[in-house]
Image (cartoon, rainbow, N blue to C red):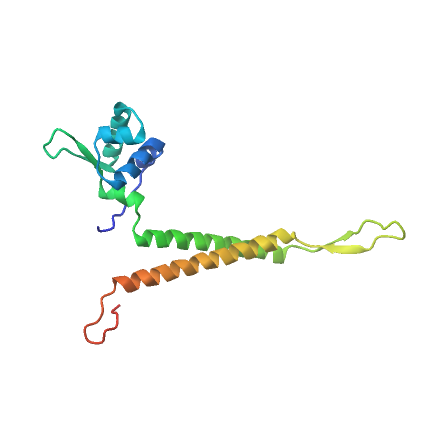
Length: 183
């Protein structure tokens, strides 16, 4: 199956905002079904299923196929299938974006920790004698969060790169002369 680019509009989001319609899409991902089969599987009234199928059909995620028989079967369109099974490059982009966002958050937290001013504050007085001023720095939580986010971001980006390399290697055809993959 060729990957399909899906353009989501405001209307598409409204259609996908229903849990019942999402359940119908997931059920149709297994196989094509009639309204009765869907109603039985989802434990819903036929009229409810029919209404939701109409909305999914209007949005282009489901198509009705009569086959000239008495029963009308509903199946996912390529766009509907693409919603539930994004092609490999979309997954890689999502992972890479999450990794970049995490890495950026980690760098921001580490920068905030390293550039926070150090203030002199008095230490509470001891029962005998007086207090000695001591430095108060940025919260250690910034350092911990920054390191954690940077590590997670780096790991996600590495994982995305490895998946991209494997996918690229799998789609390249070998060169008949040298046996090496072509770019």
